[in-house]
Amino acid sequence: MSQPADLTCEFAGLRLHNPIILASGILGTSAALLERAALSGAGAVTAKSCGPIPRLGHPNPVALDWGGGLINAIGLTNPGAEEEARVLTAARERLHSLGVPLIASVFAGTVEEFSQVAGAVARAHPAAIEVNISCPNVADEFGTPFAATCESAAAATAAVKSATDIPVFVKLAPNVPNIARIATAVEEAGADAITAVNTMPGMVIDAEAGRPVLSNRVGGISGPALKPVALRCVYEIARSVRVPIIGTGGVNDGRDAAEMLMAGATAIGVGSAVWYRGVAVLGQIAGELAGFMKAMGYPDLAALRGKAH
Ligand SMILES: Cc1cc2nc3c(=O)[nH]c(=O)nc-3n(C[C@H](O)[C@H](O)[C@H](O)COP(=O)(O)O)c2cc1C
Image (cartoon, rainbow, N blue to C red; front, side, top):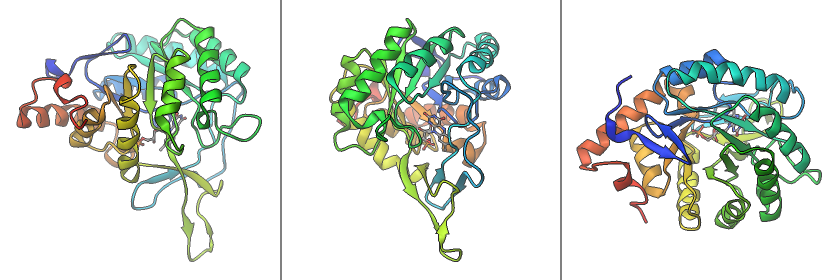
């Protein structure tokens, strides 16, 4: 893995070989898979979200490529926070020697559970905890995702902040009327960074069968269809907050990564591209980004950041 020196960066206190970060949920939580992402050249890796208790997730089919992107409703399959802490400990030990930070990811159904899950996961000493308040499958007791209002987003953020000293990243949903206001609320509640965005709720129907393709009927859209949505979200958030942003959504190559930086991101989350191009895509996108910068005469990442503003 040889990355040009000008891709190294600092993100919310984390030192990264490059700004390409494996997005949550794409390669599960197993230590071996996360290590594979690191070996392939990721700057950091995010584990799959875990909640308070084990969850089997939805029956198949849970994901498909519908042509313009992916749709998934995995149903947050996870082993529960206590077991997850053990898995993350093993993963962190493997990643440490590679100099690749591990980002844990947590979800919960109540504010109290958020702090409980974060406290359990923090015992594995990940470099950061990402707070998934935006999964289409997760909602508060009234059926609304925490990412939908400033008050609930801030409450989940504050709960995780109070449970740990580890940097806290908060992952926002694209389907809100004013994402900049939500971002401002989580920044004020103590978020050290923002991940934007999670998947966009959608549905794919099998016309011959006359029914939705996913067992859960609805799911989250990711991949190419999400990119313009994600760019707009990152652009609006960057105008409103000072904390750094992991721009996530539809990044499939180095040029897409450059666009995300131009919108105002400091790092780039990559998920569906692993499905399309294989796990080696993480290092490849970093290399392609470096190639784009050289061809276009950008001396460093700072020269790209916010360029579109
Ligand atoms: C199969 C699949 C599973 C996912 N699981 C999670 C998850 O557990 N937690 C989470 O925060 N995001 C999850 N996501 C969302 C991704 O982390 C990412 O935000 C989204 O896919 C947009 O990025 P992309 O277009 O590069 O895939 C998942 C996405 C996919 C495709």
